[in-house]
Length: 64
Image (cartoon, rainbow, N blue to C red; front, side, top):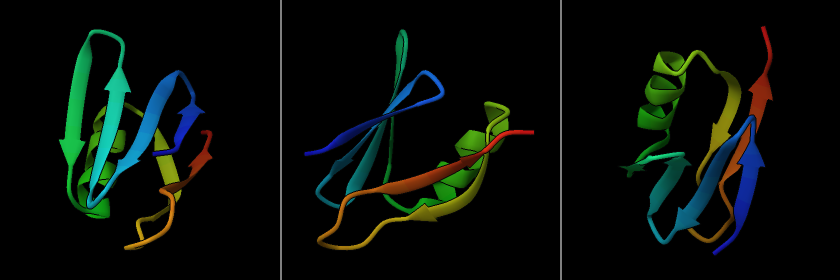
């Protein structure tokens, strides 16, 4: 498991799921689309969100 700290969010790749750890809350999503949707609700623009079977979650954050 690898974690990346992105704009205060801890994002982890857990097998086929993504864990986004927001202080006080936890979100689990299975596909990149849901990560995009969550990010939009949080006011974070992601210009790339890649989840590959054997790779680490890759998130590039685009600041407005």
